[in-house]
Length: 404
Image (cartoon, rainbow, N blue to C red; front, top):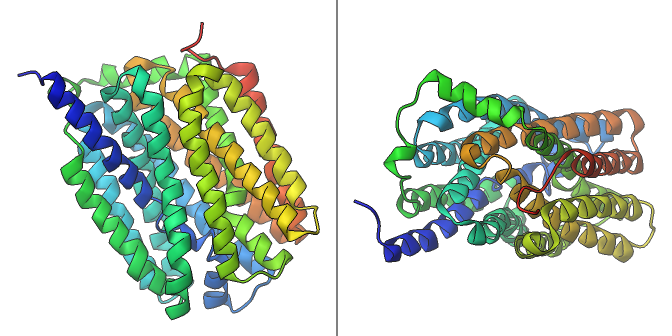
């Protein structure tokens, strides 16, 4: 029996907040390498030395590599299994990783359990965007994706508020116990009850030929492949903000964690605003035009902020970078999801492979640059290059299939 129009509208209204919360939960453990990188380093190495910071930052690389491996598997499984089932499996990995890191007696255990977050994130991200692409009409799809992406920023915003209190009451482990773990568990149950099952025709069993056909249609499409490579490169550039930026501000300007957390709040709000506004602008400005312009600006702002001596000017450049990054992220996701409409599950799963691969490249290269140079300015310029390269890829090789 087909759903009535009223039932369909009710489903759409219900599942977008659920997917947003699921995406929110995937960032609940990322504070270990964003705001708390110095503190985790001190716990296990007792030093703020650039080499030790670089070593601890590599848990992000390990997590990203695990995400790549799982993302390839999910790209295959998404053709055969229910989107909701895979989404739930991904959401379950998050609290497992949190508990493992929280109870870790040494750095080895952190290296083992932190990748659980990356595995869960790649599954949740790919399935959330695939579900949005399948259920929503084009007129509402861009805005919904903008709101889902904003869940990441809401996570950072909320975590940055609470981290000041939980960290004051204990250490980074208390933050995981009282914030990250409850959020991830709540998200799992919210997804279970809030996300509808996909229509049975999209969950039917398929043969091996369907796998090959879906991958062929994605990778023989030059624009689709370029979008994946562009997503990989721009996410390598994002590692500056997700891993090293807070540490730069704490060391360069001698700022306490509480102050940097407040700056993170402002940056997160602006990134979220960029996601939402970007979802409204893509149909007016054009996905490709928005993406190229924004990532040029992101690179320029990062280059500027690391060479100014005034902390407020540096923060202003950082905020501008966050806003441009949010606009660009919304544009790139909306452009990617429209490249191969009949195989959205495959291309978004492959995007969720390329994105953590980009993060792995960014974290590994960034860690190596920091370890050998000991300079955060040189480190920042590395990520400027990644952003400019992403803009060049989108400009020369992609097309916006929604614009004539």
